[in-house]
Length: 395
Image (cartoon, rainbow, N blue to C red):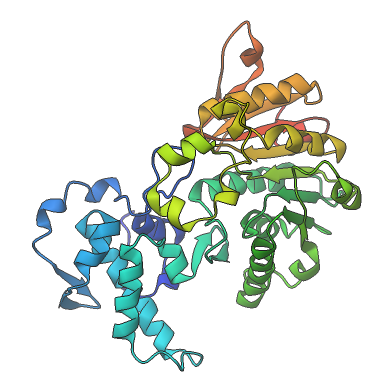
């Protein structure tokens, strides 16, 4: 059935996730695709129209001298036009808000926003928030911006749990290296129909934890989270790499463990991440501590052995660990198998099938037990034991 014509949207908040993604691009860490403003396939190759700077917004034609500023970051005219349209809408909303007493006019604000974008400041930092499934995540400098790939596997996990998790067992979820709190908040939003749900996010950064708590209150106020999230979602300061594991004793147990740790080696950080990421996002959330005697791959994998130890010690039956790419996913999967504690392990790619189809890696080796599901880059290593198998719907 053809789609009905829709009234043009003029507010960043009115956009769906997919619409925003078309504007900001596949802003990925962990592979060579990082530019926040990469154009979608349908608009690539349109740079030849750069001399025609007329564009339409709210039915009017505009000639804007700000487009050249945005082209420094956006790389192509369609993306620059889109960014200008949404930055303009954001500037108008800002000056019209009751708290904007010190803002003299939207044009001056728009000029400043475009100048900051030209210097590579991520669009999410300028607009102040980003969609993440059913929730809206406030984004601030010093805290890593949530990625679409993280949202995809978190939603896939929640969908499986809604179908298969027993309703008579209150789930305890622990998210390590939680950052903005996007994973705990989205899981709580999507699993809130399960009674007595408890989700805890852990991070070493006080700045990140303050933002995570603010995101919890923000989404409760928006009605995107039930009021029970005020007690059902908690955030704790702790160092996952610390030898003193008192925080694990305080946490007691968990059923499901998720983690999006720093997984980019120092060498890869300098060669594969975008300049805007290096200049504006926290290195602490991207790169593990240096280990001079280790190989580049081992440096990138620093967090995974202690995370697996925590998962085992806390009694987790299911663990989902984000990784950079398929090569790292296979290394982490082998670490999982080497522990002897997990009954099964698989890799989830960026685009996951609805019905769980997957390919089996290898034969006659450790990889013979490993299933890789979906299409695209390897994005998460999933391991289970005990009841975790049934929670995923695996037979």
